[in-house]
Length: 164
Image 1: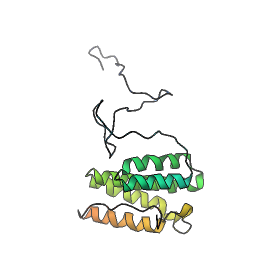
Image 2: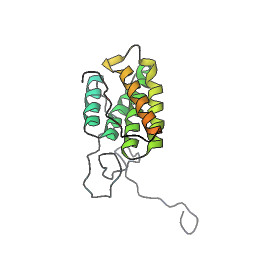
Image 3: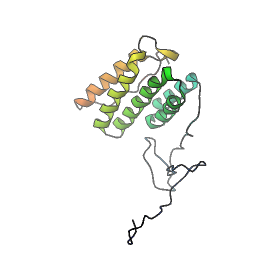
């Protein structure tokens, strides 16, 4: 609000469709950096990939210590998924966000997202679509959440598919 009580229009970064987007560079954990600072290139949003490409790219980013960026890849899959697998992709994205929170030192957020993500992928354990190691991810998420709850250790890197 300005001094006269009227709403003041703020300049905001916008994408080609006019939606607000933060164009500031980001570090490897997705935290915004000052304008002009060197950062990690942002991934384009809304890219539709095959499950194979999604899982390969997300695992590459997780292995590189970039869970925030892996979450963006998994979020694209979630948003473009069919109804049958939507909660699977959402849960995988939440696990990556949990790993992001843990890497940033936010134990409470990490615990919450790991629990939520595990809850969303649990129903896929019997079927394990796309070669996803749902049982292994559930074990990983619950073990990591327990460690966070007790203030122990750092998160290990999740394996989206066994043997990959």
